[in-house]
Picture: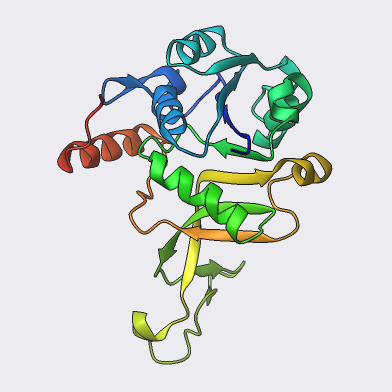
Length: 230
């Protein structure tokens, strides 16, 4: 079995939802959902949580992840998730030995182990440098010009409105799962490099937890479909 290391960035300074990463979602700290999904995936060999917050690291360790203290210089509002993954590569031998680095977001707590396996396996089977989760979208997107006029982005508004089945299929990143070739990522320093493979997750939930309203909506949805914590 090749080594796939899941890295979960989880800063302590959330402003939209204070204390978000350890706030209970359906009774379990938010970071715990990502850890459980990663540990349950057949393709994942190791799970790391990178954080500047000792409380988050203690919760992560209690759920079975390896805690990694992130330096202050890459922990502020401007710090990228890539910087946390690059730090993990430099700090931990298990990351240096990995073939695949799996970057997971805490803000998608309904991500499943099966979805993680699908993305990791797709990267390997399709020989991708990056594989990432997407969902199909059907929205008509617009840009607004300086004069307030609207301009169609993915459609020609001057023509009759197309039916959904007649339009090209388009996809949106969920932001939840990225599987990266470790060597290529270390050289590129960003999540997209070389051959990128979108992996369509037909049942993925599209709500990310960025605001209190998102939190209420996603918890309500999860309860309505009977997705409870173990």
